Image (spheres, rainbow, N blue to C red):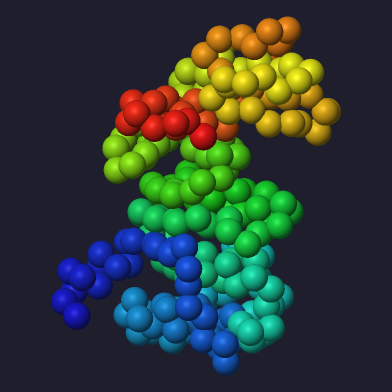
Length: 222
């Protein structure tokens, strides 16, 4: 491998949506193996870095545990640890919170928020709460087209005046569902009869964007 390619690999961290885990490896050996592939030849320095990233994702006490014995969320964190090797300048993460429980997801958000202070993080996800919690800029792709490119705040504002709460579900809404309060939340161009305006969320804005995109394609909005 050329020195240029090695340098690029060290400056890039990547977490695929689905990772393969050698089940006979421990968490430490798994991350160490990926570090070796990135040409970390100095064994002592490499092991120090492996311990650092495992601690960063909260797996320092499980470093000696085999991957097959870890939970799905723990394996996901081990995969993230390898992406953090060498403090890369660019971190590309595909659905990083898949398989994590709420506590693990909150912990991971803390890690990614800290990483975002010194690296560019590109996050591909369908979890709107992750986007709202972590991202400043958001790009919405729909059917191969860029439907939106801007800040999270501005995207949320596109749904203002189009989100409503009513006692019964009204036909004709772009999207509607029953909430935990027993009332129905609607994303609609106009207010359903008897509905009250609600504060929009990022999910509301995303649903609105998708529904209007479907209309542009002469599809029936979901």
